[in-house]
Length: 345
Image 1: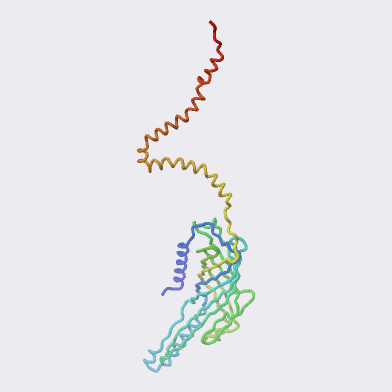
Image 2: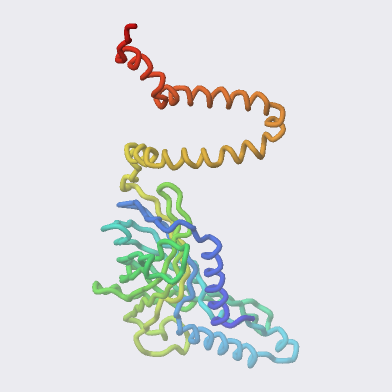
């Protein structure tokens, strides 16, 4: 069996590798929703240290069954199970999220925490007895979440890491009920605890965003009753317990009101194409001969005489106007005939 610390470490490593495998290569990803609804299931290890009271009660009942055994056979019938040393549960949260400005969010939500621990004992007559305790919580929270700027991150090719800060209140029916009684928690108006977590955008598609969060919360509650009211030989003082702890959460949010997606202006695209025109043309001119020489060598050999005639004709056509303009003899000959007087004999 793994210890709780090893389980938590393995869970953290699993989350890290999952984040790395699903990491997006885009550096400019933002949640474009102004108002969104979210659902956030999770896995939590509750910070419930009072579990030892219930284990001590089970050990006491087990020893009572042993003392009531009359012979070896009765002693062999006595058996017990132990409560888990870690309170492991799957909390579920839902709420409404507002984006105050880009990458700054304010959320309000409510959750449900439920952890049932049960054991079975057998007495000297081989009869089964079930004992259990259940931790139940209805936390209400206010959350502020903000994205970590990319230029502050030492990791590359990552996007939209965020930090969340929470403040919790407890709603009615936050309680502990056991095989021996029930313990209701108080609901103070000033709150019951805090939470902090770091999250990462795992996936997004249109208005759907999936975040992964790993964090810690402390939600301390108390009751007017004593633990002695819900467990044999419990402390005779006002009961206190914690329904927070280390938690891994997956938040799925859907934007119901979204910011318009900025599209690039067609005029800007056209101007960019015009600017790239000469460069593209020169590139084609430089590349085309190499491609022609490499791909059509056989065709060049066949059409070499025709190509030479075409080049000669083109060269003659281009040089003819130049000769007319550059040779002054042809233009000045009529002028000499007209300007020179003829001598009579």
